[in-house]
Amino acid sequence: MSDSLTRSTDGERAREEAGAPDPRLLVREAGLAGYWGALRRRVRGGELGSLPVVVGLIVIAVVFQSLNPSFLSAGSLSDIGVYIAGTGIMATGIVFVLLLGEIDLSVGSVAGVGAAVWAVLSVTHGVADWLAVLLAIGAGLVIGALHGFFFARVGVPAFVVTLAGFLGWSGLQIWLMGEEGSITTPEGSIVEHLTGFYFSDISAAYGLALAAVLVYGGTRLADARRRSAAGLPAPPPAETLLRTALMALLAFAAAYVLNQSRGLPLALVLFLAVLVVADFVVRRTTYGRRIFAVGGNAEAARRAGVNVEAVRISVFAVAGMLAAFGGLFIASLSGGATKSLGAGNTLMNVIAAAVIGGTSLFGGRGRIWSALLGILVIQSIQQGLNLLGMASEIQFMITGAVLLAAVVIDSVSRRTQKTAGRT
Image: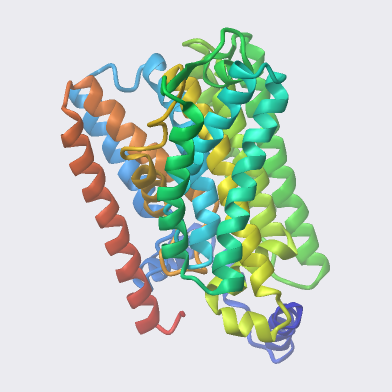
């Protein structure tokens, strides 16, 4: 795989030596008109990226705000920031699996097992709260690795393995919860604080916004310098400055809104931390490149020296771990662990969040931040419908329609790229 990256770099240098300018340089030299033209070409070629979901979020905000002025209030947006954490963390794990071109149907039951393990150990048996939390997350990791083993080593399709896991782990969850079927979250416990704690000092939200902007701007500058040093096209400083300014506008606007309510939610901080770490792993490590390679073409990746089985097992382990972690957030919101936690529409919301956010069901294409965008769409719809007093069945139908639209856009995008010779 490193050889392919080297060939790509050599190809860019060869074009320059032959006098053929790099298309990206022509775009940047043309300024805003060049970027606008490049955007139009990408859209016509099927490379939509996050554009549909961003447009969708804007439409959702406009529609629900016009129907209920409370939708964009500080309290409503703060609630959305808390509610998206658990399902969003689980969706982050599903993004890893979808990048392989596979599916995990067990995330809901694994979330339930994680919450049950924590509750039984911490509340029933008096194990230290922090240790019970770690053991619950570890249980999810082991379960995911077991799924990956049967898929990668034994050869059982992931759909079948995780469907069996969905049934089996649901039974284990019910057994762990015992006859009562529910265990209330103790007051002051770690799990209670996951969604109940807020950093009320305004400096917390603004400090996080500042840190995010500095990291984003610093990362882009470092990347530009690395590319320049390697003789590759790099974005001009003006572009980096503009992108960083837009990031600052979004970050500080979010911080301002949160401070108008109860402050910065711990749940949102943890969710963003998971996204940042996962994004770094996927985009900036050899392991992440191997995930994309396996998802794009497993046989080609194997011939390039990638341990396909190890990658698959580890990806399912990550998905299981994040499912159990997300289950603790759901337990925090619902006031405790129950034998039905993770059931209902949890699985569908998790998968829908990843797909609606832009991760392809066909593997090899997507971004970790898809989990954030997708769950924002789903939770915004649910929040808006709740404010309007709509029944839950209406929410299910609308979410299903949005999911279908996302898959249709993905399919059409792939077909358009293939026609344009971009795949």
